[in-house]
Length: 199
Image (cartoon, rainbow, N blue to C red; front, side):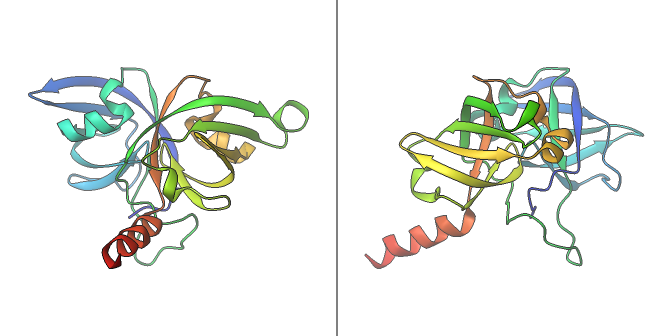
């Protein structure tokens, strides 16, 4: 389990096709990540299969390639990295499972305040399958970053990224038209499932 509080970014150093899947080498390796440890890569929960002094490799299944942006990842691309939440750790963001539903596209970005001193408003496309779980002031994870939803419109939602978050994540360079990974609130999905079961 993760909280969506990204610790650092890494760079995809190498990609290799393995059957229907794909293997990524990412640099640098976050401190404390060893063989068989979980790590969220731009919001996708993966396993560090092999680690080196300053890198780790992870395998992506065909399902992961189909549902996330990592299927099109190329060497040199930056990714957000987060280690799993320790049982004794403080809970900062919201519950993020690392199970990405789909991707979303950045529609607009507007700096707030002088030269973005108040952060940046980002408007993302809202896939129809995710719309029931996205509400104003509710949580969402975009590329693994825990964000609060500032507004919802038909077909889109808006978040505000503060300067500190932008500096620590890939949001400083995400451009209009770019695709990002989207994970909606897990508890909202469970609640909707229970309502459906009881009729």
